[in-house]
Image 1 (tube, rainbow, N blue to C red):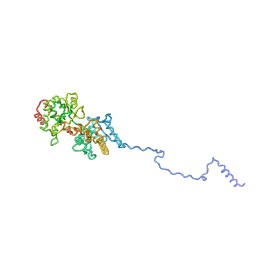
Image 2: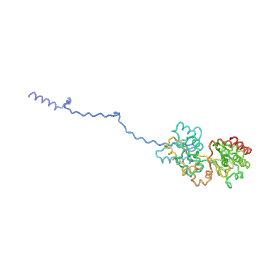
Image 3: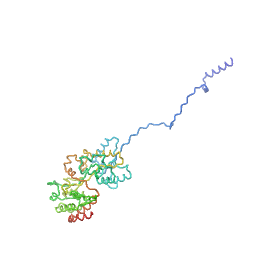
Image 4: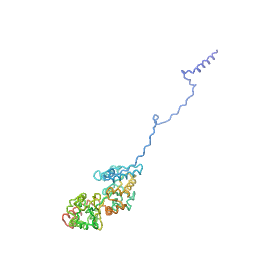
Length: 414
């Protein structure tokens, strides 16, 4: 065998053996394509799927005093709580957050509004229930937003006049009234004829009232009923001497008739006057609609042609710093003062109605009181005139003459 033939046989042997101990020769392999690099920010991290977050609930903040606590367990509280729940249910995604604040004092509604307005506007309530004196002060201090332009509810003819006035400060609407209180005459048996001072003084029934009240609200009611002005041309508190003499003469006449006992000068609160009626030591009492025992009531008889009961009350007001919530807050206020709810709630809560809608209420003694009620003067007027009227009334009960007393009071006011 030739040398060339032997070489061919040897190569064929090795190829047919397929020995794995020998790597394939480079020129006998097919090149494998190299994949291009893919740019990634975190090549070692495998991204995970996360569930989309639920939209946050829209929060509407409401401040209430303890007397309107939704969880008080009374029939009135349950009605109010249900009304809030209905409004919340009708606005998907809304959560009403209610906080209870004291009526007055350092932690009271008005002081809390003042502090929050200066230090933490985001914490202000969108809707807050304020008593009339605090409403007036807060409005004048710029702590409240007018509701004019946001609501036309106060323009409705379905308000008692006192209630409509309750929601206004300097002819600007600041609140929707929902609860009223008025001064009334409480007596045991029906009187023959009209309830007026002539009939009362001729009846010889004793009358209890707080002649020692430093605010002298009863005397102030009598003074205003006789067309007495409480503000002069410059807007300062004032008293008319002739009208004041008429009020003091009324007291003198009551003492002479045995209806007004001089001891009423020691009564300083309406609660005590009402207690005298409850105990039977008085046949009649001047009190408020929020504290009525069994008996008949009538508007406080005036010294003019008509009755005149001083009134106060509560209203829903806007204070929040979030303008997006203002329209929703006023919508809630309108819902809480709608006549279909307001009539039932005021009856259960024992407050004077603010709405004219109910025929039963309108034709009742409570309705007559509401029709004869007038929002009492500002705190400034009461603070200036109250002590003077109280002093004058006590001096009459001590036997001094009305004309001389009135003259000296006017001198003090100058």
